[in-house]
Length: 169
Image (cartoon, rainbow, N blue to C red; front, side, top):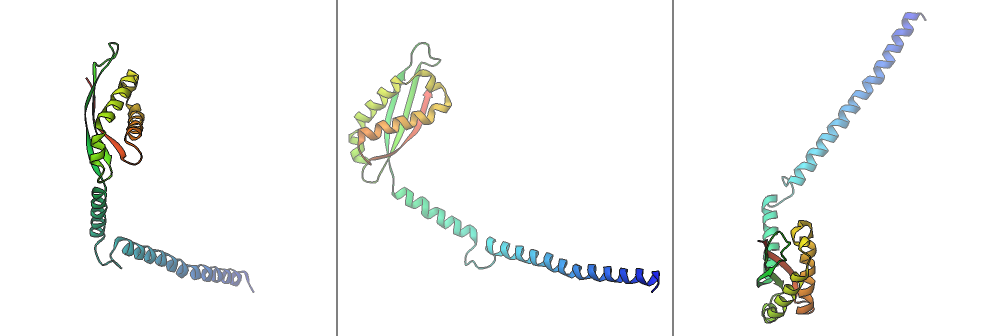
């Protein structure tokens, strides 16, 4: 064999190798695209869903909200005004809130409201003025007030304390 035939044979062999890989590459790309398209169609609800996904989400959200509304009652806490010391930047603290209670327990909590207001008033007067002025302390103050209300009300009556007004004036 001559040098020319050796070069031609090598070129043919290298062409066969790359020609064999090209259909495999196209097949792999097509499989990935078809798989992704199928996943999207099922995930978005185009295939396999009896109702559009937006309708299913809305129905489920309405059921959840309705169930939560049936399980809760709110009892208002009368306004509490606390005079602050002279060195404070504000003169008064005005607090108004709501107590979240289990259904059927609202009347029992309302009967305890004088004690609840007393414990909140006493606590708010004892808190350092800088804690009122620091926004990051609001969560701690709320947790402390809730714990005191739960101790006064008894086990399981009060679920949460919602602060509707907390104004320094």
